[in-house]
Image (cartoon, rainbow, N blue to C red; front, side, top):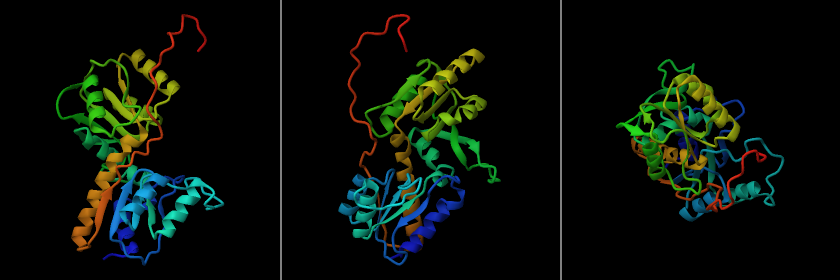
Length: 290
């Protein structure tokens, strides 16, 4: 039976904390290094629902992709929802460990898991890590489909393969255009538009695309004569496949060390959006204010 310190050392080999962005907050939030670990739960978000799941499961360690305190805090009072999370974790002897941007750029990382879920073959990173001589680490991935696809078919595949959310998959561009290469990035991706433009791909699948950056990017691509489709999925859905990848990686480490670890992936949907209401108002007339 490994100690928490042993398991954390193993996780740090997968996602070294020094590869996280300077603004990020990765690493261990709660937990005694000497406590034994027999059951581990992987989840995207360190929210009350996943903590409750960890308690029900009898987990000793909860590993999440998103940080609990990204910008720090001055209180862990149980009167706040994050403070309540900390109290419940400590009360039930559950450690919390975070792998965020260090997991985004890992090889394999968040975008590799997203590509694998969509049966896309990874060619190279979208934004290579300059410190990686092999050129395999970095943010996002440039991929090619396993067979010829249209944008419509790629969107349908994403809707089928990724966890279901209220948003589904939003699409901008010609649904019937051919997709020979596609960039993917788990999580928020419109900061990568310059890299996508330079990559010359046919489609970009990511999350959290905003109106103005997406509109301007599409207009610019149309002006250059190289159309590109945007596929916008829910943030949580694009990062959840990493939980499966990470769990499999820890299982392999556990087998190699002879540990008796039971590793689980949370099925709790922590996407914040609930089912949508269809738009029933008439279309705006020409010249209406926007």
